[in-house]
Image 1 (cartoon, rainbow, N blue to C red):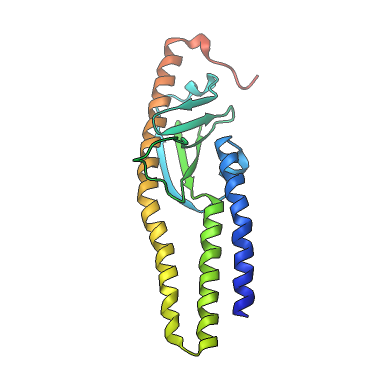
Image 2 (image 1 turned 45 degrees about the vertical axis):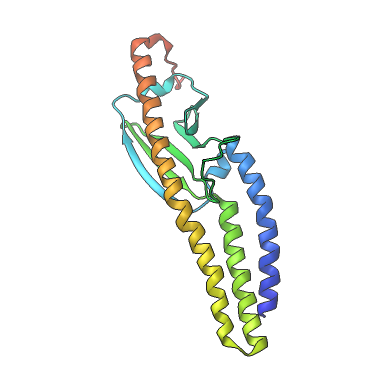
Length: 201
């Protein structure tokens, strides 16, 4: 049974790598579907004084950390930019992706999720490691080998433990960047009311 579970976990882990690649391409292309998948790990709300700024058409805005996609129905999708050649930047397995919703009462509700692909891969890896450890212990009759499983579980926990604070700090920064974009856009709209579009037409 443990050997079958091990093989199944390996197969699912292999499939999850394709999900990792597809998801990475999709979210950097701002596919709405992929922003809805993943474990929610971050939630906050911004209060804005003026939400009519949104009526001015904005496509994609890039800041120092984040890349933001604004849509005409009041949703904003954002994530960290893909940096090339930044040798001192920490790269984690779980870069957050976020969805923000502008509400009619002048609030921006933000929810960030862990990526689906890496989460599935880590889960399958832990299941496969556990199944392999159990199978090895049963076959050898040495249940002390179960301690070997602690190495895998500890490694998985360490990956999450390292990734979360790094990505949370980046998400906090992107939320600040989003607030800056909203404030700037709101002021621009107030100075030039003719630039606003009527989305209800």
